[in-house]
Image 1 (spheres, rainbow, N blue to C red):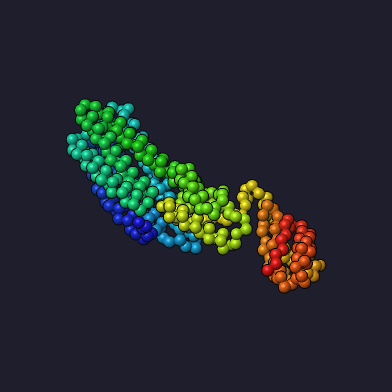
Image 2 (tube, rainbow, N blue to C red):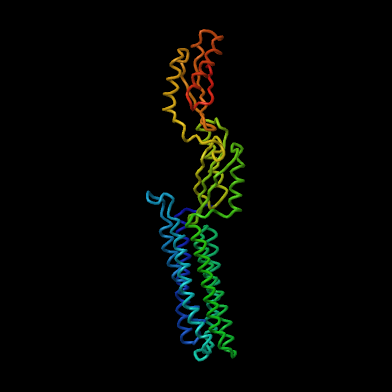
Length: 380
């Protein structure tokens, strides 16, 4: 079921505000509990939840801009705001992770600052696990339904908080069982998890910002879908890229070389329609109609345009009085040269026996124009 841009933005906001308030409560409980309960790992986990607050804020800001319709300044829409926000979130998490790891590592190697956490910190860690796992399922389900990679990324951030809380739970329990070093070790592990998440988010989003192509499997599926159209002989120069929650496709398709402009346009619309209907991510398709493979055949870009060529042809034909009644001219730019097809009324013939003579004169005079490779005259 298709969802409008306005509905999509509302869903992102609804889910993210829920996550924001839950993380606000969790970060406060864990930071205060970590300080009062003397648990370095719980304090680190509280900072992890605080980073969730920042990610939620970024998502809300990005959703506001990404939800705006395309305009003159942003003809492809505002989807890149999602991508940019995800890069910022990833870098922010890496910075947070470095700070946590540095402080926790100091405690690992300094036994004098190692402390045994209070028992109530176990309950806080367990509460955090359940809360964040619930947020993960809620956010991930909505992200899949509205196809928001940003929301799915934020869902995994919630799950990472749940996993880090499990590590904290083990660290606190170990410290209470006579191994106080386990609590700062757990804090280091949490920091590494945060850094890994930050790296993954930044890496994939930067690839999107530099217009990296879609996954090879998806590209192959796109090729197969295009070639299902019987009027498409070949395709080349297929380019894909992602923009926020959408994907863009640009492709050259080879059709019969002498189709009418309107038929070629109709084929391009059919290709565009099939891709948009078959792939949820794709919402913009640009199809270039080629009468020949311009990667292999001689290019025609240096040949004269119609207006210039007609002047040259008329000059050549003016030397043959029988060609004066020509009333229709079609030009085909193929293989680095021009094929000229013209027609003349049968009524202009003195007799049918004159047809061969006139065709020969037409061909000779047309080929006298340097860029013309073939010439055919028809009678109607």
